[in-house]
Image (cartoon, rainbow, N blue to C red; front, top):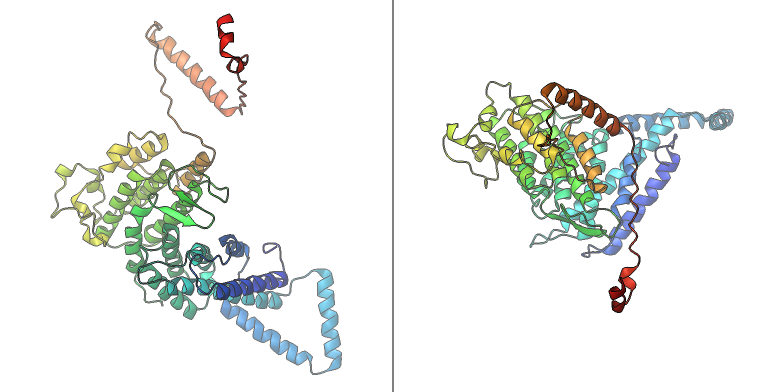
Length: 459
């Protein structure tokens, strides 16, 4: 309904009722721990709203519409003409731009108010021991996704307030679930890339340090929700019918977007911070599941390829042997700030282990980064790898590498072997292109397992 509503009247009524219901349930719960407010899918439906009008433009359209209505009230004849014109527009199914802008402004105001209410409730429910209301925390990623999508339409004063709230939430990032914390960072980075980024006095370092500390938790910790509990890497099914890898994949997707906004869409001037993130990415990928490890290595390859040509960059030194690296001090992996980790004093030795990974895609990515090869975009884009490997996990498909070996009794010469290899490769390519469906018929057992024990002597 949201995507097909042309005039915006039905969407406005639906959003108002949904916002009212969320507010009433939130007040009824009274901040009780574990109380169910609404499901996150309810807030996710607002992502389908086609909002395109900025808040300032909508305010101007609203004032113009009010002036036009005030002018039409001066005479009865003008009022009758306005009613006739309105009915003709409804019959012709034309869109009134002023009315559409007014409706979208009201929708934007309602959903923004609800999003801020969710953020403030999460911030207020933190107790001294660092715990928070679980039901409100489940709504946090959905609210942050909506704010990240519509932040470019919000007024500049509201954007500043949003960044302040996100900064306060990230102070307790170690108490938040990984998906909620990573969406906090993603929302902040997207907001900083929107309109008014030159006038907002915010240092991106305030959000890059929490991202650096959050990377080791990716793919390791569990994400708890009312719908079910799932641990990364286990192919279990939660209470909502979704695979447990669904939650970790959503976190990996947000992590990919954070790295894209932090290092690819903006220029990072600190080479020490860049080296710290590359080291942390490879060490995190070493402990992740294959469907999470390959996209992270692809992100590291993209970042390293962009900054490799810089004169002050020392990314190439991290691909050498540690004995050949000349640096002062030692690597400090426990440092909270990547600029204090001294990552230039170590090497990316994790790539040498992942070269022999059981998953061929992880091994190929590790080999490509070790050899400083560029990604073959768009096929090897981190997002594309995440989508393809995520489908493999959902379909329980295990990737494997085929190695064709010569039989020890094969006595053919080299030319015959080359011709047979070429023809065999051609036949394999043809079979691979065909859509094959294989049905395995179970073998008949004769129901021997149902016979009494005395019957086996007669067989």
